[in-house]
Image 1 (tube, one colour):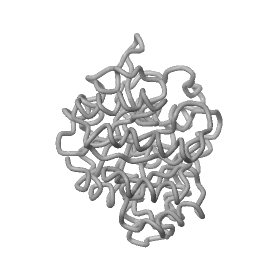
Image 2: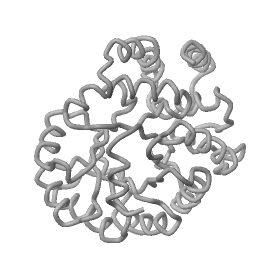
Image 3: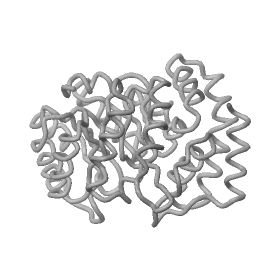
Amino acid sequence: MQPDELKRSLSDGLLSFPVTPFDAAGAFDPAVYADHVGWLAGYDARVLFAAGGTGEFFSLLPEEVPKIVRAAKAAASSTPIIAGCGYGTRIAVDLARAVAGAGADGILLLPHYLIDAPQAGLAAHVREVCRAVDIGVVVYNRDNAILQPDTLAQLAEECPNLIGFKDGSGNIGLVREVTARLGDRLSYVGGMPTAELFAEAYLGAGFCTYSSAVFNFVPRLAQEFYVALRGGNRVRTEAILREFFYPFMAIRNRNHGYAVAAIKAGVRQVGFPAGPVRPPLTDLTAEEEELLADLIARNT
């Protein structure tokens, strides 16, 4: 898929990040992954992100990521697949090339490892990854990788295959300046944990879509919320927030890392044996699993 075509796919419709299932030995389970991704593809996600944040990119070996991409492409051949990519610049460049070779339609460049960096360093990091591949690149503005508007504008001019800006910072002032300055040069994706909680604010800031983690286990409800949001049906969006998302947030906020672990628990509860999360994350307690199971039952 050409970068401009992928950009169009990112500009409208719901997006999601499938979890990465592990077997009893802790290895990637391609059969479960294929079943789950194939199921999700039937609910009209415009783009799926393989081995992204919800897919535990941070816990994967670099050589596992291309395998996951190939499995995603095979299971959802008509849905564009964007692969997670990250760590230090040289690792990110090698990984970008590997996932491009595995058939990824684009990459999501997650924050680099550990340390803060100046804007010139962040720009060099993004520039080298973009120049390493021909596929589209989406930058993830979050944590220690916050691109300022001037830096992003410079990169957009220098890197034709930089097609997207995903924000997980929650800084509405910053992202509004980005959308005002760059206009339709990029596609803008909301990327806060449990993005539906922030979707209305991001829509007002010029973002047209977001990545839904709960799409992993309640895809019909996630789509219903998105359609109501884009249609201006505030009565319905507020009802779904009250009935599902705020109770889910209460479970998610019980422990660090539950933004991923609770999603994987939900996937297991709807019938896909996705296995546990990998350390350093931990799974939900038995009590929390029951709370989540009850919430799913009441909303499906």
